[in-house]
Length: 71
Image (cartoon, rainbow, N blue to C red; front, side, top):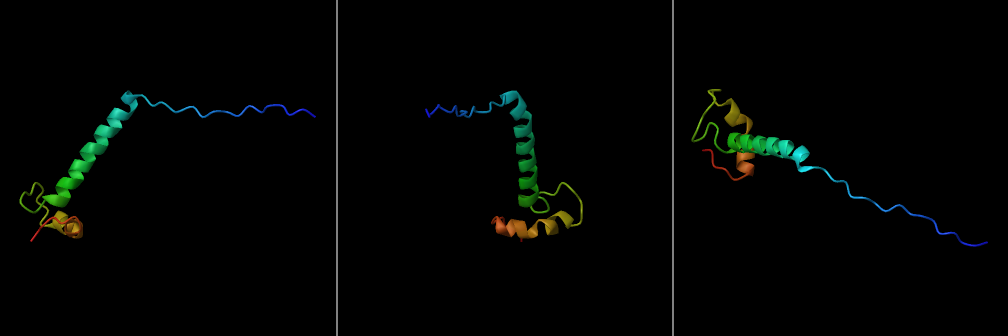
């Protein structure tokens, strides 16, 4: 019996156009900046929402975890 060569498929890299990634990258960046704002500054030096400290208490432990002063 002769050994026939078996064709093995070679993986082809998936190409995603930049036009499809850019809107999601911008959205993720803006979302990250909003989260960073609320964790770092809201109800601290700057307060944009008058929620009687609700946002501050919600992110209070996160502030200390990320070494942001809040007292």
